[in-house]
Length: 182
Image 1 (cartoon, rainbow, N blue to C red):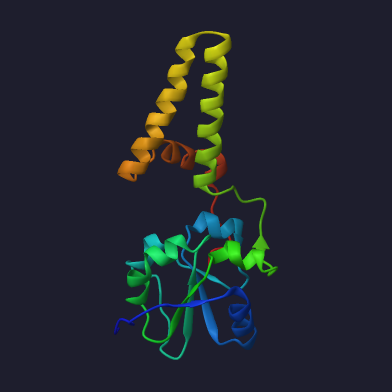
Image 2 (cartoon, rainbow, N blue to C red; image 1 turned 30 degrees about the vertical axis):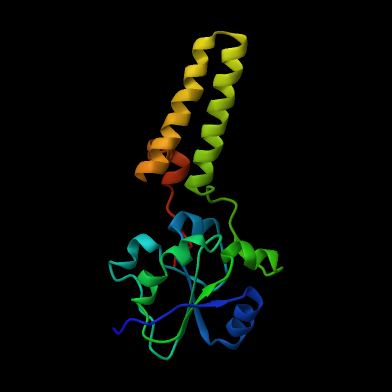
């Protein structure tokens, strides 16, 4: 496969138009759990983590359009994505968020758990508030809970490994298989 030079930006309305004509393959690079919860109808789920294992085959006559939630992951990985495409390829500007902001529909499955990143934010936020509240009302020692969670978030940001995310992935509601992955 000959690596492509660049991935070009495409706006949501232009992508929708190309999708109606059947001239593109839309590739969602988010995790399978994120895709299972909500995705652009007709998109393929090829998580960035599986890309190197040969999880993507696009014919040279097909045009690929990559996207993620906000566009940040896709932009940060343009080189890696371009290396897997022979023909034309694009990046959806603003990702799934921009797609929805443009009034375009998605397939939403509320029976699927929300993505792990949001679960971490909710859990960490609740624990910090709990520690602060209990520290003010019960004992100042509870402020240590807020400090511990804060330190864990700093460690996760610096190292790229989040213990809370690892724990949450093991929870029963996150162990069900994502059934809508293409």
